[in-house]
Length: 444
Image 1 (cartoon, rainbow, N blue to C red):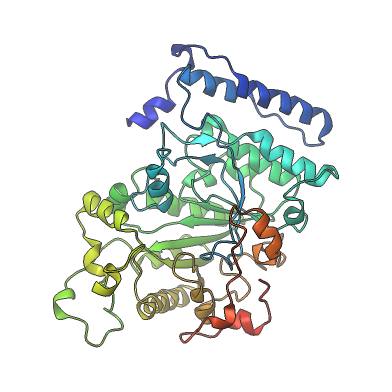
Image 2 (cartoon, rainbow, N blue to C red):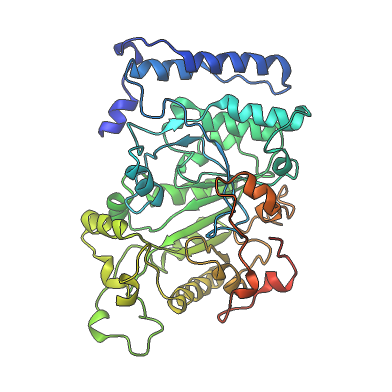
C-alpha cells in the first residue's frame, strides 16, 4: 500500500479532534441552500468535518478545500479556439493517478502542492450555489453569461474527477446529480474505469454527456511505470464496453500520443540510418484495433509535447531517453519539446487510416502543439463542427461551445487583462484545409 493510500485510509477516530470553522461554514451554507433551492440535496456534509479533523492542528497547505472549481481558460494563447474551456475540477492540488509526464504534476510540484498529502475536494456548496444563483434567481453571478448559454462544462482538467477516492468523498457523484437536476451539458475527461461502475453509471445521463476515456497506451507493463496510479488499459477498455452498451457517446483520447520513432522517421528523406533502430513501444497504431473492439464510436488524437523535466522523469521511470527522439534544433530551444509539424501530421494520417479501417470517427486536439494546428488538421476530422466530436452526437450539445463566449467575458476570468485574441489571418495552414474558417465560424 502506498503512503498516499495509507493517509486516505487512516481512521478518523485515531486523529486528534480539531475545531472545524471551514466545515461549519460549509454546513451553514448547505442548510441555507436547502431552504431555498428546488434541488433536493442529500449529500453528507459531515464529510468536510471529518476531513478537517483528520489533520488536526496540522491542516494541509491550502486547506482541506480546493477553492476554484469553475474555470474558463480559453483566453490563453494555447487554447483560444478550445471548444471545451469551461472547466470544473471536483478535486485539486494533486491526482492519485500520478502520471510521470503530467504537466499539472510538474507545475504543482514546483509550488509544493502536488498530493500534499492527497488531492483535496471542492466545496459542494460552491457548485450548488452557482447553479442555484444562475438558474433559480436573478442574482448577479460571474458565470451567468456563460451558463445561460448552456456552454458545456468539461469535467477533469488539472486532476481526474473519477479517482477511486471519490467513492469515499462523493463530490463527483454529487456534482453529477446537480448537473442532471439542472439539465446541464457536460463532457467528461477521465483515465478511470470508475465512470462505468455503480453508482456513477446510474447518475450519468447519455442525453447530457459525452465521455472521453484517455488511453495513451495499451501496454500495461509500461502503464504501471508511467501512469502508476491509473487503472490498467484493460480495465479502461472494459469500461468503454459498458458505457457504449448503455447508450453513451464515447471517445478515446489518444492524448498524449507518444512518438513511436524519432522525429522525421516518416517524413524526412534524409532520416539518419542510426536512428531507425530507436523505438518507443508505448503508444501504437495497433491499439486502435483494440479500442474499436469495445464498440466506442470515435478517436481523438493529440501528439505529446514534453517538458525537459518530463523527459527526465520518463527516463528514470522506464529507461527510455526520449531526448533521442527530438531533433537537435528542438532540443536547443527552451520550453516544451514538440515533433515537427510534418511528422505530427504523418502520425495523424496513420491514425485516421486505422480509424477508417475500423469504422471509427476521428478528430484531433491541438492544445499544446500550436494555434495553427486547430485549423491545419480539420480536413482529417469526421465532425467538422467539433474537435472533441460531441456536437450533433449528444442531444444536449446543440452547437454552443466555449468558442461562443465573447472575448470580453473571457478576459473577466483572466488575471491578465492585456491579452489579445490571436490574429487568425496571420496563421498559415499548408497541410490541410481551414474548413471552420471557410464556414465563417471564427468568433474571437
